[in-house]
Image (tube, rainbow, N blue to C red):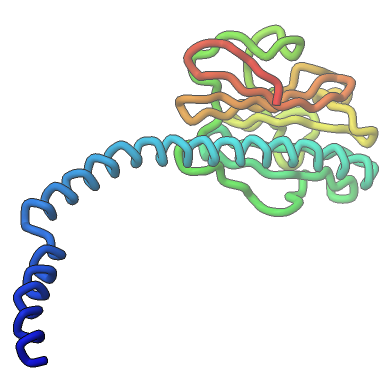
Length: 210
């Protein structure tokens, strides 16, 4: 038995040595891992940007729909108010007792890398606007008809859930556009009122309804 153990020991030693990795093997593995990672990071970044802007677009569309419901349920006007410089938006309801717009909920910030705008696009989604552009300026917090606030954009609904202008007349052509530099999303509201969401590449008009 002792002779058998001595005969096996050299083989065992060789198996342990063969199971290891050389320094060259490790360098090759690290290099391959670096190449795969370098290819994956841009793809992951692009996917993350796509998720962010899609989420923002859906949130804006949801708030537009909520504005319609708030106006109807409270028998007053309601609006979604966008700050085009700060890249924030919020829901406001007209307080008829105190004659002022009151914030309903909180301020919502667009995701990192997403801003209000439509990049280089020069054409609105079909059958929405004569010329591409954000909805009109918002009136001041204590006004329904004037004292417009610069760098803002508002979609206003009356108590029947119809989009209206400062005079209270039904109006179409409302839209809010956001972009991340690669894509542009639009939430449009017609006079009917029909709320729709659109997508296009930022460099060439190719609107697709979502």
